[in-house]
Length: 309
Length: 309
Image (tube, rainbow over all chains, first blue to last red):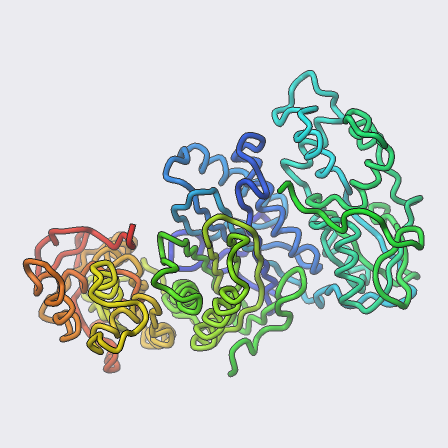
C-alpha cells in the first residue's frame, strides 16, 4: 500500500481525516528541539526531518502497529530560510514513506528556536497493542535493530573526530555512526512482526537499552537481566571508541550499547517457545523480581541517555 | 459518553490507542508559543491549557466531527514551576472534557520559551467531513459562537484598561472580554450539528471572520458577502471600544467582529432551504465569483488577525 493511502483528507483543511481499518487509532507525539535534540551546525534540515519523524514513527511500531500518518508542527525564527523548511519537509516525508505513512497535517508558528512536534498515527490491523506491561517471568528479551550507534556518532561529533558531512577522509565505519546519530533508521516493520509473533511487551530504545528495559520491567512488575556476551559491540563501535581520547575504549563501546539512546531499536519480551526470525537477537531473560541487571549485577554508570545537553 | 471513553490505552506507554467507531480518525495539530499566543503575565497556566486545547478541539469541530482525544507536547524552561505544569494540565483536561475528549498522550522537553503542541483526534460518527471547499452559489453563510470578543479583550489588556485577573473594579462586560481572550470557549457541538444539518463548507474563526471566510471562498471557488446589519457589535464590545483612547469607537467594535481571531466561532455555508437552529445566525450569502466582501464592497483594513505580535 503506498504511503498515505489511508488519507481521506490531507493538508489544507482544518483537520486531516485518516481511515482506520481496524476500528482504533494508535497515536504518539514527540518534540524535537534545536540545541537539545539536534544542532543546525551538524544536522541538515533533511536530517532533522528524518530524525523528528523517526522518533514518533518508532513509538507506533513499538505498540506493534503500522504507521499511517504524521502531523507536524514547526515553530521557527522568521530568519529560517525557506529552503531549510522545504528540505525539512522532504526529510519528514522520506522517513514517513519508509514507514508507510503520509504527512497529512501541520501547523507553523514563530519561535526563537526551531521546535518540531511530530504526531504519528498508526493502525493495529486487528491485533491488540503490545504494551510495556505484559512481560512475564520465563520470557526472553530480544532486540531488533542496532544499539549504541547514535551515541557513538554523537561522541565522534562532539570530539571533532568526525564531521557531520561525510568527509572523504573519515573512515567509512565512523561516518556510518555519525549518520546513525543524524538520521536514525528504526526497523519499523519489526514492530508489527513482533506483535504477530506473540510479543508480550515491547518498547523502543530512545533513552538507552537499560533505561528503556527499566520502563518495561517496572510496567510489567518483573526483573530483566541482559547478557553482555549477546551485546558485543560491533567493529565500528570499537573503532570509534579507539579513535577517541579515552582511557578504556572497550568499556566505552559497551557503554554505548547499554545506555546510548536515539537508535530506536525495538526491544521486546517473547514467550520462550517462540521461534524468532534472525533479526530478533535474544539478549536476556525475564524472571520475577524488579529492575534490570547486566550479567546478574546492577550496572554502574549513567542510567540513561541524556541527549547532548 | 464520558470524556475519554474511547481511550483504550492512555498516557504511559509508547503510544495511545483510541477507538474509532466510524472507521476513520480526524486529526489536527496546533502550536501555542509563549510571547506569541500567550503571555505568562496575563495568562495563568490553567488559562494557557484551556486556550491550547481550544485551538485544536475547534479544528476537529470545524470538520463536523466530535472530539475524542488530545495529545500534548510541552517544551519549557527548567525553571518552570512544577505547579505551573500541573495547572496547565488541569486547564487542558477541563477544556478537553468540555469537548468530550480525554488527554491520552504527551511528551515533554526543555526549551527556553514555553511551547505547547496539541494534537486533537475526532470521530465523524459515520458522516462525511465538512470541508472548506463545498460552498455553492445560493448557500447562506451562518455563524455559531461569538465574534470579536477575544480581540477586544486583547485590546483592553494591551491598553491596560482591564487586568488579566478579574479585578473587582473592572466592569463585568469588560472582564468577560478579557476572559474570552484568555480562555476561549468554542461551541464544539455546533460542528457536528452543522454537519447533520447539511452544511456544505465550514471553518473555525481563528484568523478573523473575513480572513477565514477568505480561505473558505478560495477553497470553494465562490464569492462570499457578509452584511454588517447582521454583525452588529454587542453592547460589551461597544463599551470596550468606548473605554479605549481611540478616535472612532463604533468602527473599532465592528473591526473586532470582522477581523478579530481566536474566538473559534464556527462559520459555515448551508443550502438556503435548511432551517437553522437559533444559535446559527445568518450573516451573509454565497454567489459565483471570488473573494469576500462586506455589504458588497471590499473591506478596508487589516486582512486578518495577527495575534499580538
